[in-house]
Amino acid sequence: MATRKKDHRYEHPPRHATQPLQRVSDQEIQKWVSRQHGFVPESAWILDCKEQLGLVAPGTAPKENSCPPEKVASIKQAFRRFGLL
Image (tube, rainbow, N blue to C red; front, side):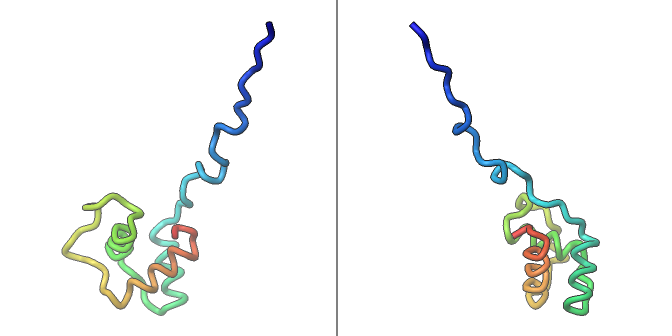
């Protein structure tokens, strides 16, 4: 009696679902924000925004140098531009 081999094509998630998020340096984000919005965000601000949006583990960003509320929208735009959101 012949047995069928299991068809494995449909057991794996689509390739795009397993690819990691795009790696973007803080310098690239700073450069883009500087050109678009006229200020250079500090690395600590970028890390704080990433933490607020769940892109890094909680407790990663230093609490003494958090991102000013008026700068968050500009940094979020950069995240969208680089495919982080």
